[in-house]
Length: 443
Ligand SMILES: [Zn+2]
Image 1 (tube, rainbow, N blue to C red):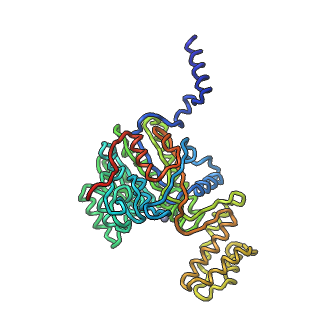
Image 2: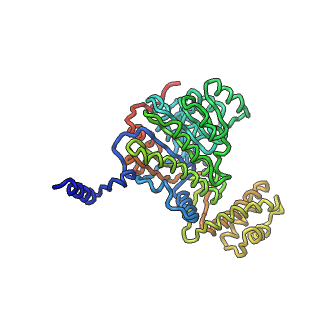
Image 3: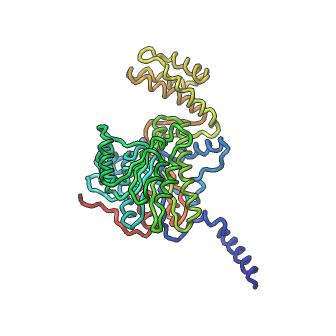
């Protein structure tokens, strides 16, 4: 057999065995050991949020979301140690440390024992570590990757733990402080050798050897279609790339707040901004397919969203987002009658004929305490309009449903499962052959 005939036979055999041809190899799970690891967390991003974002992308003439194009698909259970519905603090602790804790707690077991973060394991292995978010750098999800605190609201305590955490790059839109002592915290960071910039682009001027914090308002993507999360992800890759490897966690942090507010248009834009950050990692993966592992998941679902495909109208969702500001003009207190609400549905949204269920929803406002009626009315009117255009919300809080897992690259096959949130960091460390323990350590 000639070499040419042999290679044709090999390709044919590979085809018959279901092995893909070489040009598709970048999309297949790899058995090699990854040294460039990305963990993407969409805060509040359930399956329905992904479905809505896909509809939004299609509406804009885009193709398929990057995250759903990743070849490995699974799901994840989200409950915390003490409740079936988790918060972001307990969820981040589970994701970063493989241990369940009570809602509100960061990097500790329910009885207060410290548990180490996967970031420490990577830093000990000589790899660089980045923690990125579109919300505050010491908000619950990023804090879960470097902090230890009995309460997620101990912002100063959490922020002060960053310099010694071994994290090389921390980026987000703000630094929180419960007593507005941001300047004191930043001063302590600088004393500990951390460089701080207020613009994502400014990172390029800082030596790559220095620990860097980017506190850039532009990373809050909820007000602009092209938030800086994707830009920061590309900056992190460039900054942390080295022969020993890196671990980069990227949180799409404001999908959650759009869910709490029950705002479909904002929610889909946040999920799309998150997906663009995943695209930045995917571009890196394509040029390092044997060494890269990408995992995309969420900490929990927010809002109890249902996407009703038959009536889904993305253009109308955008319109509702723009029109609903006018609902703020509704009267407050006792003047807020059901008649005023039905009139507002006509004036603001052009909805004249309300169903029995919709009318019942609006009449319920009258039984609330007077001071709660205005905000409840704004929400109810907007939600009726959104539901008619295919997006229903069932709560202003989190839910306990399973969330998506998407993965690609070396070691990704382990994530094609229905798994627990405590499995993620263990599977990442196993894939990377890092034996570091995530067991509790004494204080
Ligand atoms: Zn939340």
